[in-house]
Amino acid sequence: MTVTRESYAARGCQLSVLRGGAGPRLLYLHGLEASGEAHPFLQSLSESFEVFAPEHPGFGNSADADWLENIHDLAYFYLDLIESFGPEPIHVAGSSIGGWIALEMAVRNTTRIKSLSLAAPAGIYAEGLRRGDIFLWPAEERLRNSYFNQAHAETAIATLDPIGNFDATYKSAVSLARIAWEPRLFDPALKKWLHRVTCPTQIIWGANDKILPPGYAREFAQLIPGSHVEMIPECGHLLALEQSARFTTLVTTFAKAHDQ
Image (cartoon, rainbow, N blue to C red; front, side, top):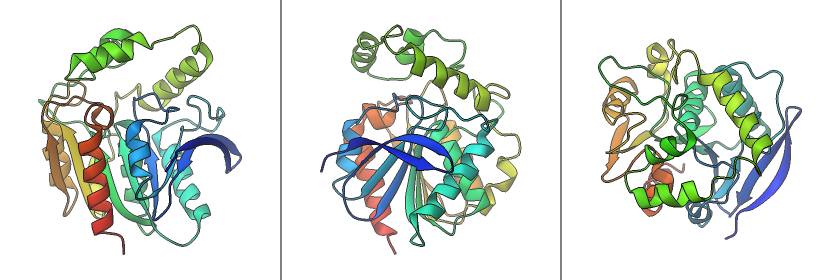
């Protein structure tokens, strides 16, 4: 199966979407990875699912959104998007801020979500767990701190093109700051409502994550009823890129087990 880019209109916003495959629908919500690229893990997921992977409103090649003020706006936007797909529930996977958005969706309504696969989601604060600050690090340092294997970091750094991609990069940075600057990468109210996440949920974490330390996986597991943790060794924050095969296997196996 081939994942290709297309334009998709949703609630008055023109999205840039990577889409492909056949089978049960899976919505993938991107995190800090380059969101407009057809990464190998998306291609792999498309072998088992109809993958729908948008760039968030206000990010990358998707249209800017003057209504976007906080993470809750994105949660409601994607709940509306799911409604527009039709009555059949879908699987949702999200990485980092994408996992945070997925959780904000799920505490509001899980009736259209078959399963949740959360890869190092942001969204809560845990006392005593020191997080990295993605807003203070220069681009190269952020990439080095995003990977365990520095060969991956070097490859990513070599493709940085702040001049050629200035407009999309700047727009994404502004939108990210808008939803996650203050407080840093969490919603103070989310923790108390995570008991409302009633759909099957797995929490996937890189054991060497420097942005959100792996202790957060335990925090989420204690707050989300029936959830379980999959820890990936020798892996940083961008686990879908660094351990693509393992990530794909975990998401595919879990979603298929709950495809009712």
